[in-house]
Length: 123
Image (cartoon, rainbow, N blue to C red):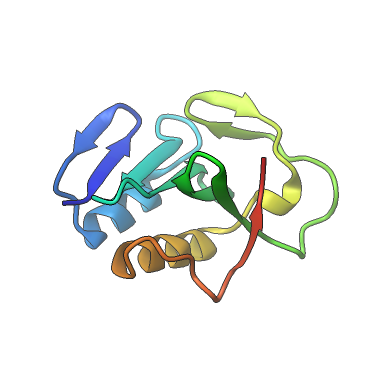
């Protein structure tokens, strides 16, 4: 079973379409954070919305990979994640299509990171 957590709501038997709908619902205001947890305890976390997202896959406490957009300029971006205004590096903010690609691969390939995206270990 795949668990989906969206801003305080829990679905313990989520499908890929449920998860894709949840990603599309992230608006950076009322809904700005979701976590998908596989039975293996590997998670993908998506924060932000509606146009910019931070996507992180965590397999172990020290194994955290974040999708990177190398086309983004240096500096930071204001983004609401989990109801909190944060200022992550701009290169960590990706578009909705990249976010959906990361989530689809993660769910359909049992926690894998999409090879179509650039990933970086972030601390």
